[in-house]
Length: 367
Image 1 (tube, rainbow, N blue to C red):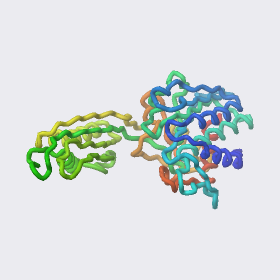
Image 2 (cartoon, one colour):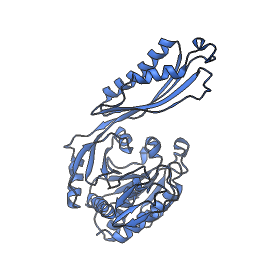
Image 3 (cartoon, rainbow, N blue to C red):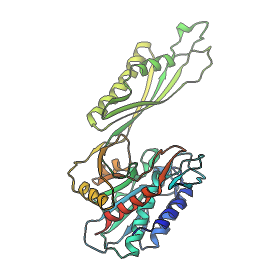
Image 4 (cartoon, helix red, strand yellow):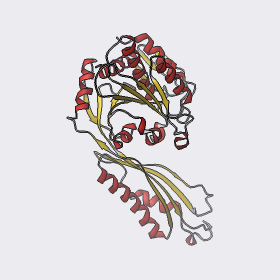
């Protein structure tokens, strides 16, 4: 029932539209035009001043033709860098990049599956409940679109978020995340004439980092130092050094424990050497966990089976719009589309996976 040729051509059109985070306006306008043409009510929320994007989140609501609870479908419109000037290559049943940019299957494979499924139910007069498609901005830079979204506009209590890799995956839990920004302030001195008069901020920061538990802490918890920075001539004891880090856990107590541990390492090193610590922590998103017997998981699994997919329940170590939706009382499930090698210039997706994902969405929204 899916128009495979149109699905592929639309996907190729979508990935050619530049939509790096903060620049999603052209993508939003194209999606809005495609869905308005089938009778969707279009709304763009006023979140630009909060997200920094050139457009708001896009809502497209298709009125129901049969009884049933409304359902939300979601994908994000933005891509990571380098995502401008995408030149897709179709070869041997696979869509990939020409090697100079990402492809943008993350998350335009989700976008196109939603659009094609909604087109199909309208064109073929397939009964369906009210479907609300939500396309978010700035997901890749901190889930900003879904964080600031106009939730008064959301009419559904269940949502399928098409933003994972393996087809058939249903994500049952995701981590919360803290970001840590730290600056160690030492004291300048001549490195050759009087180094003992200085306090090396680099030395202090490195000692703090060396005492931190990092990378895989346990099956639910991770931590990573993303960057450290200090830039001084070798003849000056460095006065300032900075660090950006993160920690994640699917267990809220473990997340608090890990962030405290990393901050304690910074405090102790600064106290040892007499340095000053400037510390800022921010919670990017909260964790979530679904009961595997949740009715919507069963509904999603059944739709996947009807589409020829094998459902696999799995937890994830990454954040997504799901984190914010769950915080607002929406049962949101992240599901796979088949995209692979995302965030790299080797990103690709098979045409079969594009078709299977669109079929899965169609099965989900049929009455």
